[in-house]
Image (spheres, helix red, strand yellow):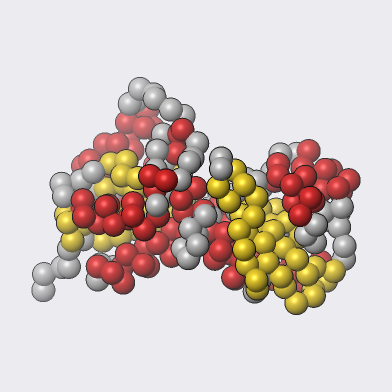
Length: 256
């Protein structure tokens, strides 16, 4: 039986439209969109958080794979294609692998985004955009039926499948929550200004812990990697339903 397939470029165009890629302002190294093209036909979809060598090598085992990542290849800017970058590029080209990266467009997407999906996994209601960065809202706030701080930490841990670290600076009761996935701990003062009981993010600088204590905010560090698995999985599942192509998640946790 012939495997299902779909042409690459129309699929990329639909991805760009879906994620509103051209309109979302991002860090220069994000380079959102198609970062590596293949011969033009896609037979499988893979999703991963990072475009690391281990993930690319695994994805390239099946020719014609489209790899969707949150963190692309070019965060360090223009660089010589040597060492690890050379090995990743060679593996992709030898394996006829296409690679598509979406950073902030995927974080803030209203249906498939990391923030909205984690908020829903936590059971938040009345979810609305919050915290502006580069002229766009990158987080969400919502309400939750009153929980103790410890019970909320347990719920968060279950949602992400990993241990949560807590800077317990605020109320022992949690009813309002700000979610900004990834490395947003430096936004603790802005979380405090919103008056939320809990600020959920992935990680933050060292000083964010004591700032949370001093500002009266419960800051939950749930892991940069763990909080950003939602979007790529949802995007891959969406594309699979649209194209009939199979999809997999390539898990390569960093523990951070």
